[in-house]
Image 1: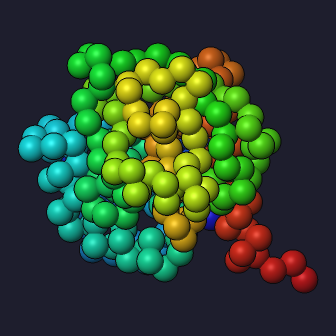
Image 2 (image 1 turned 90 degrees about the vertical axis):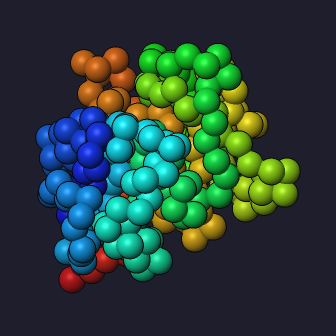
Length: 227
């Protein structure tokens, strides 16, 4: 499986994402600059964290109009797995690939620490390696991770089982303790915690590696035919 790590001006978790895929997962990966006009050669798309375009206007608001986002949307529509982490999640929200919006943390302070997440839905291409309701430890690092949506959207997210991760102890004020959501089709996931920073016990947790393993497992089941 071949992954693309999208790099925007201001991305700062792209190297972590690249390391997670190449050195821990053992799959192919390449950096793709924000002005690229094709993602055809890639099987999975990763939008890393950081401060794209300095977070001017709003987090993800300018990156949403980068040339490569046309290709990200195209890849999502084609059913390819698209994962947005932290700023990547914010960009997916701005692009309309996921519902809702992101607000400043309730404390109005930047938060950087490991947190406990509950796996609310392990029946997705991103979570099939986890147990139902499993508690995992993944670090957060954000100033605007307070997820919000209207009541109708929240009801739909719950009904369609699109809430994939919730915080055990909400660090930022996110509605319904939401830490990560998926689209209706099930191939676009946005989450504020950083799984790429939890791929080895030396980092304090290897719980994030199972997310990337889940993606590969789902992709192989869909694309690899055993003779």
